[in-house]
Image 1 (spheres, rainbow, N blue to C red):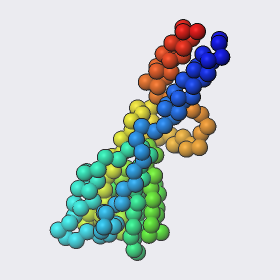
Image 2: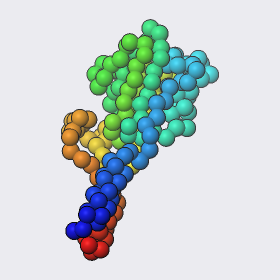
Image 3: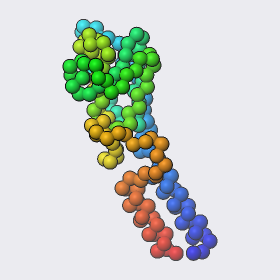
Image 4: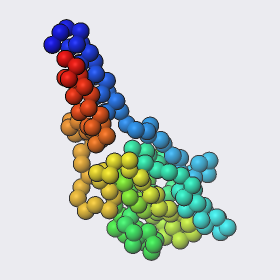
Length: 173
């Protein structure tokens, strides 16, 4: 290859790698309950967290921020959510400033550890959407893959564009 064609070839490879490695959307942090925070709803607010979660679009990579006093945030299974039973939680948080990273797609069941608070509406289902159909799900029985994997990830579309660009550059030379 001629020197200028080699430079062009490597420039195209670098651009495609950077574009293919960038996330499709920026991660967003959602403050649960917004100004109200995570608290026991009043008698006329029993659907407050369900309504709040239903108005948002949560994606893999986003996070939920909980601010609360003398309360607990628990991730439970579906049965625990519907029965306000937190005797076998998946995760427990009680530091008053909890950040939960949404690292899988599917439903995530969150409740207050206090059954009375849960029954009065301090619970919600967060439906996490993935732009990558091969992404792990909260419904999967297997553990989540390491977030620190060194493997490069390319979407199918990026692989096709990459193959096409390399083919064009090679055919020009």
